[in-house]
Picture 1 (cartoon, rainbow, N blue to C red):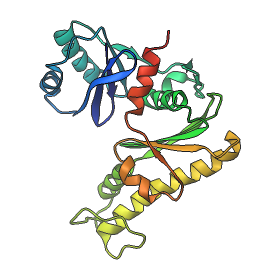
Picture 2: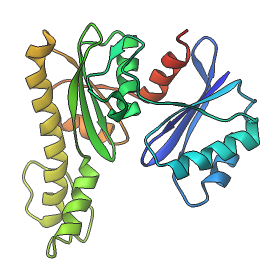
Picture 3: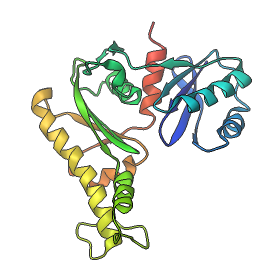
Length: 246
């Protein structure tokens, strides 16, 4: 058994992987000041894994905190996957491969392992990430923008009079500030995804499958005018593929 960790900006998602690949247990813990206690509670009843394998986009301090918990509970330090130039049939487009977020790379690994390439892999979370993956595993590159919730917060932080008194609804036309802010930010995210998918189709040589994952995926999907396949645990599934590769 392997304990797989997807350490994102908002939360740590984990899965206990059996052989062959299947989840014996899974869960998520939001980052918090007392993260050690939260993890110990979440993992207290897990059997001891043979290995702990982690993909992280967080800082060294949080990685060290998780390492201490894993060593204390399982007597096993995490093995950290850093983004490679090529692995599991996916070839990284970045000239400096390690600068591509490992979460983006693993989401593409999962998509290719599932037979979905050519595809656009979109991650809707704190950041909105977009990557184009060809049928042969070539990563053509991608884009990063603020996620819709971060767009909203950035707008509020940078303005004086834009101060909605309630969370807004997402509408085609808004007649108040709360709805206008929410609608503008969420529709901007949807429009960027649609534009990227449309522009990448000729380069991919076919109409790509749009794969949408991340914490805001379910809320964003109905705003799209093109079909999207929702993906759960894409990073963890990619990590499972990588961990099982000889």
